[in-house]
Amino acid sequence: MERTAEHTSTAVDDYLKSIFHLTRGSVRAGTRDIADALRISQASVTAMLKKLAAMEPPMVDYRKREGVVLTKHGEKRALSVIRHHRLLETFLYQTLGYSWDEVHDEACRLEHVISDRFEEGLVKLLGNPTHDPHGDPIPDHKLRLGRTATEALSALHPGDRVVVERVDDKDAELLRYLAGKSVLPGRRILVLSRSNFDGNLSLQVSGCRGKVVLGPEIAERIFVRLDR
Amino acid sequence: MERTAEHTSTAVDDYLKSIFHLTRGSVRAGTRDIADALRISQASVTAMLKKLAAMEPPMVDYRKREGVVLTKHGEKRALSVIRHHRLLETFLYQTLGYSWDEVHDEACRLEHVISDRFEEGLVKLLGNPTHDPHGDPIPDHKLRLGRTATEALSALHPGDRVVVERVDDKDAELLRYLAGKSVLPGRRILVLSRSNFDGNLSLQVSGCRGKVVLGPEIAERIFVRLDR
DNA sequence: ATTCCGACTTAGTTGAGACTAACTTTCAAC
DNA sequence: GTTGAAAGTTAGTCTCAACTAAGTCGGAAT
Ligand SMILES: [Mn+2]
Ligand SMILES: [Mn+2]
Ligand SMILES: [Mn+2]
Ligand SMILES: [Mn+2]
Image (cartoon, rainbow over all chains, first blue to last red; front, side):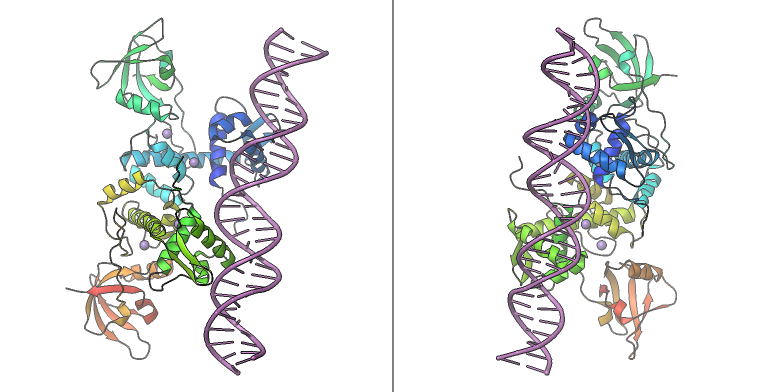
């Protein structure tokens, strides 16, 4: 039974997800980058890349010393895992009352283990959400991925009015910090001023008295769209 | 870090759970029984039992050729996994709309992977439930387990009035069959008659027109308490 | 007492997926 | 062009948790 090896392990899933994310931007993902992202050794990555390329159907196109890209199959699988991940984050946040810095780790464990039935249940419960708590788009049931916000807050000028669309979700510390300042997806921001010395931005955040000051390294990880 | 090996694998968890269930009734669990329950070879079980006994602290008391019992530590761990399992089943049933024959497999995968935070979220969401959809008691937050119903429907006589408390959850087929006949935890039953030939029971089930007839092998797997 | 069967154990393999150590390739700086 | 560092690969090892094949043990029936 099951001739077309439809099952993938936790390890394989996480590799595919990493490769997917690393290849938004650069053409191929390098061994080093994947190793860093997954916090494992380069040697382990080389071994796994060979396996992924040798699968039937192949999950990646691997060229020695030149890195990898996902095949159509690998990409489908990656998107499926990402859909699980983001639906789970949304569920943890909205239904179980997690804070947005707690959701990632839990989702990263659960994403490999839930069934289609579970996914379907979440979608129904949450009303087919389109974005996770960090503002990342959730691939739809056909695994089509909406556009990911890329305009960074750090690129703005005084007087600009924007809406926060997405925040880099890699760093729990940062997420806690931003939550404290009410910098969350959906909030309106008016840029008051920018320091010429340190590049600090002064902001007026909607529903929040007083101004918020953010350093440039932080502003680089907040993505916005123009307001109205 | 983490000197007191507090982590346990999926495999270890499932062994402990099996041993817990097998030792309700008999004093020690045999290699054969565990192998059958987990659908793996006896040899694999022997190997694992040695490991469980060698853990620090030991999870089981293992005597060659005489079987195993859980230690206090093993029992705590088993009860924790069972708590996860039954909370998850309740969640899947009540919140995600699973039918009661679908919940077991999903819960058996998720039970190893959810955090304390998740458990806490479920408890809050579900209102600290005491029983899972099959009527099995959920260990409380101190891992104290309530009494499990043991009086089988098959032991009753015409005229007896009872309430269904629990149904054996091992067989999805049976669960579907019983759901079709409205034999669910909480339903009232009046025993109308019992056949002397085949032992069939005729029943009147609350909220259900017409009578229900059950064979003795099935009635043995339904557990009840006297009504009022 | 012998025999036999089922339960149990031992020994040796396997496959995943990680690791370290050592080697090779590439490429930029001098 | 040589050199050095970073990136990548290879080789060999480890742990976990499964497997099969080949015993051993113990009790029941003869
Ligand atoms: Mn993951
Ligand atoms: Mn996210
Ligand atoms: Mn399980
Ligand atoms: Mn149950």
